[in-house]
Amino acid sequence: MEVAEALAKIKKINSSEDDLNFKVAILKYFWDNRDREIIPKALGIEKQKFLFFYNLFAFINNKQYTFDNLKAFEQGPIYHDVFTLTYRDKVYLEQIKSKPVNYDFEILKIACALIEIFGDIGSSNLTHGFDMWKNKYDPNLDEQSIVGNNSNNITAADISEEDKNKAKLLFNELKEVIQVFTKYLNDNNKVLLIEKKNFDQIVSRHNSELNKIDRTVVEPVYVYLLNGELHFD
Image 1 (cartoon, helix red, strand yellow):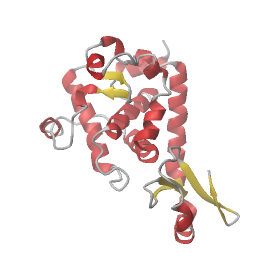
Image 2: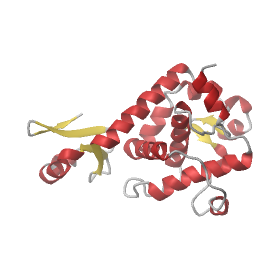
Image 3: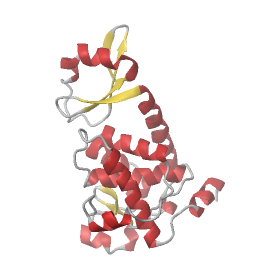
């Protein structure tokens, strides 16, 4: 076993109470700090994708994480124990009064940016590319059967080397993106990534071109100036 894996396993949450506290604390950050213009409600898939990517990024960075009650559904990896949890839920309101949780602010910020940039469809597509989901999802089972079937449980042991490499690449790319680009929501509710150094110039002079990009474009769209001309990538 690699040293990184050993450290990650030591930092895994053990008790069910601490596990719930940890998930709720992470979700509280998402509900409190998400861009509400981009993600108005954050009660469904976005919530689950944020929770998943936070814990995956925490795992590869040797920080505290949990994959408890994570199962392979058609939509991707889902923590079924907090599936219906909302910020108005009594469980949530009680749990946020619990003891402090050791989460990582950088990972919280990057996981939140991922959901804002990729949205529900794009983030779901990302999760479908990981072996940890592909090897555990059974299309022959309905949702009720998945909940009661342990063979669909996703654990740290299911994370392949390719998964780790993908997650590390994605984490590092997002880390760079949020340093260089600013999120911009156009009139079609499509999030664009506009380079910070030319943001005001791009938005003021090229607004009509920015609004031509439709929300059906799932992949991130990078917008920058090159020799005074607008470029999309």
